[in-house]
Image (tube, rainbow, N blue to C red; front, side, top):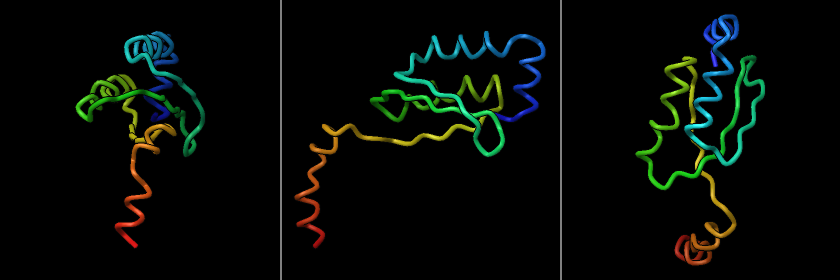
Amino acid sequence: MPVEKFNQAARDGTAGQKMRRILEDLKPEAAYFCSQNGMRGGFLVVNMSDASEMPRFAEPWFLHFDATVQFLPAMTPQDLERAGLDQLAKKWQ
């Protein structure tokens, strides 16, 4: 999140309220906050069933904090099992 935009929200007392509202709406499975590239950052673990859900997860961060948002699809062990790696390996030998 860009430093100045978040600092402004922190100074006017709205940062916590905005973040709480976003998190209550998105209901992530997990949320972690940290430093990224010298700025405030974080990771949300969310379950999306369709790519069309991306705006729902990204827009609040864009609108309130001018944040940069990236999506990193991940699989559970069960997803990986269903992926058919054995068949793919045979196909692409």
